[in-house]
Amino acid sequence: FALMLGARDAFSSQTDRLGGLNKIYDHLSLDYLYPDPSHILTFLDNHDTDRILLSRPDSLGWWKQAVTFLLTSRGIPQIYYGTEILMNGTKEVSDGFVRCDFPGGFPGDSRDAFTRAGRTEQENEAWDFMSQLLNWRRGNEVIARGTLKHFMPENGLYVYQRRLGDKEVTVMMNGNDTPLTASMDNIREILPEGSRRRDMLSGQTVEITREMTFPARAILILEN
Image (cartoon, rainbow, N blue to C red; front, side, top):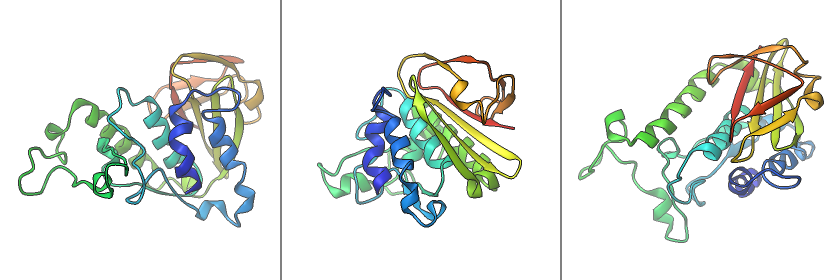
């Protein structure tokens, strides 16, 4: 619940010296309180809370970062149904409002969101993103059992790494709605200058330079 209570504000706001993804960094910095943080159940919402999306978003930038963190950080992720098609709502309306039927498969449904044709373009973007992450995560021992090392966000860029043996996955996020340029000096112990990694999301090879530029709300999931 500690993650859930702060996730929406952390991911949806801009990352400055104290706010935004700094709040996720601060959250993980308290992992020493747990006997084994890898056994914590992690979630962004559930049937007794507001959904992570209070309303339909204009774009999916921060939502994708929240989902990426849930599925790549330590712990055992739990996904509330409908997240994959951007179901949204707040308990201020009613408990039932955050527990609406998934559209499709029920008598009287006007559409079937179990099918690509039954989803909107934005819903398909969300569905495809989560599908790619979840299929990659399935059987991924680095994500399931690897250690976690993270770095305080610098100039809005948050970086953390999962490692198991000689395998590693490094996640980089621009926690702002504008492009940023950041020095890589503070993370060179895990990503030395000149090293090359494959970005799982794009399939492209990324070379680490002393200074790098990231588009707004960029996400890189780098594998060796």
